[in-house]
Image 1 (spheres, protein in one colour):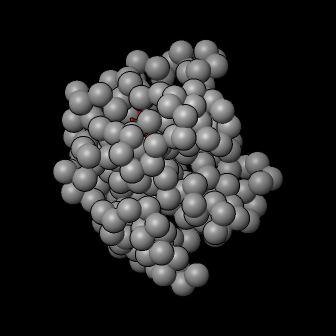
Image 2 (cartoon, rainbow, N blue to C red; image 1 turned 90 degrees about the vertical axis):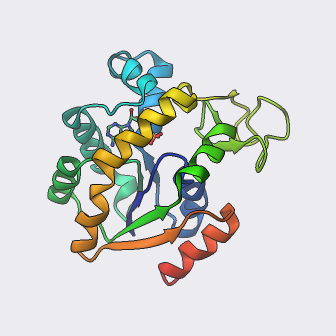
Length: 209
Ligand code: AMP
């Protein structure tokens, strides 16, 4: 199953993706996680994108498309994938269509108030990328990932200034993808407001699973 998870920052795409991986048995590919790992590793890509991520702006299309194209050429995505955070611009979506046939685009719908509530409490594992929330889903031991023992931290771009920027960027550059994929008949809306278990059930329903 070749799926795209579309929606504003904080819609819960990454959290649901962790569940969806178990359900669909395909890898979760998050461009944000790839960039954050590169930054943590201090690689040339990480050095190039760090300031961009911190500011809440988008990495350039050429770099991002190249990265995803390379990732989708690997053997583990033969049966499908969950693309989370890509595409984020129309040129990225057009490029993707040239190297992979997406089957469905799930549009996670949530108002700004929900985004702010989620991002305000979000914590992320530096090692495996797992998302926690300080109210809804706390790690058992503060600051330590339940899944891999990695450090759980607050993303720099979850600071209020960066969140505003990311929402602006989402509206200007990513939201046009909703129409783009609706016109292609690929878009399915998912109400992202409920807690993750309910969203997971909705996800299964819309995919007929
Ligand atoms: P995310 O974890 O999906 O919220 O992504 C975090 C940050 O990584 C974004 O704010 C961008 O700076 C960068 N990023 C992730 N995916 C993309 C993309 N498809 N195109 C450009 N920049 C991206």
